[in-house]
Length: 227
Image (cartoon, rainbow, N blue to C red; front, side, top):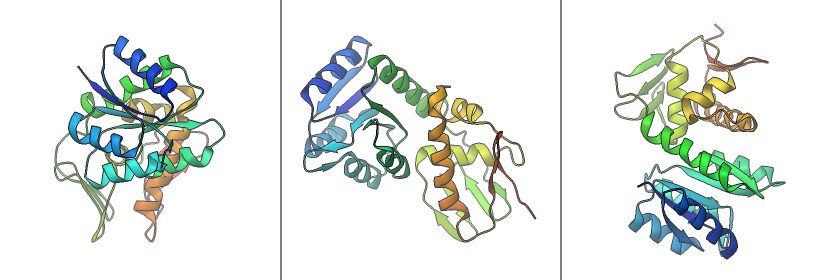
């Protein structure tokens, strides 16, 4: 069975999610603070982490940074306050994969966990030859991205999004198509996730170089050269 780690200092939320996810058929571990969360990641090896932003002595961002520093690519679903837009943006910038705002529906939590599991397992980036466009190269075997001679560090989700774009150069992909291909869901309110990941890629891939990732207003996004 897939294993979910729930990290939240609120015992009510922790208990609710633990019970609901176990009822849905998941193995569930729970943690109330950062040390417990890191120990659970090390020992339980979760398939998905549901991570609250506000934690005793720190934040969920601290947990994510420490997890990613160990090259652990487990999908992370953030729980954020409805009005904390900056938290959602920061979580996605740091390598989180999705978020749900409080108050939330346990049904939505379950649906997003299923989508993250499909993304990380059933629809992984195909291993094949390195792809290139202009001075950008993406190597699925090495999981490496280079712009010229510069090695670019991407999260697993960022890598998958860039791989999707470089396999279809010049083709305009809508937000709905990207959500389906990268995240495997089509929730209408999740388009901001695509926008944030595109912004992340532009910052990491295009900064200081010829822009390759473009927005086609009202349609979607594409990888192309304007030259």
